[in-house]
Length: 191
Image (cartoon, rainbow, N blue to C red):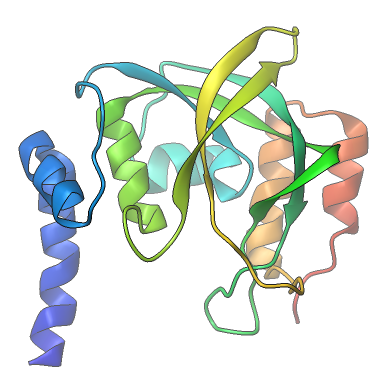
């Protein structure tokens, strides 16, 4: 029975991602409510593995309408989540810090693509949650964006080498500032 459930869940999730109606029903069932229409555009701020083009475009299957490097102020990048395998990988997270800033990639995507991202992040439900933020692109233009956050552990872990490499490669590919790339290069990875 458990094997059947494990096989059925991913298929159900893929079906819901393709259907706006089923996605809305699922969100309501989980006590959340997706807003907007499927083709409505939204800015998404990626600060983790989604900065990497291969992860975002190929693995997640999302074609951004536009992308820019950008930053958010008042947050710090932390690796305070339990990844897989537990204790040997810590994904990125945002933590409020009025003196810090986090650089990443701003993608303009459709609401339908945002729901696709939600399914990879465990939204709604067990994982990250949406956070509405104000982001600034490299040219100083301010946009309202959506990103993902979750209350993390008190103590940071170490990201896997594979994961931190995705962040570093994405940062370089999108031309993030050199001091931020050096910061990512200095992050110690798990063995």
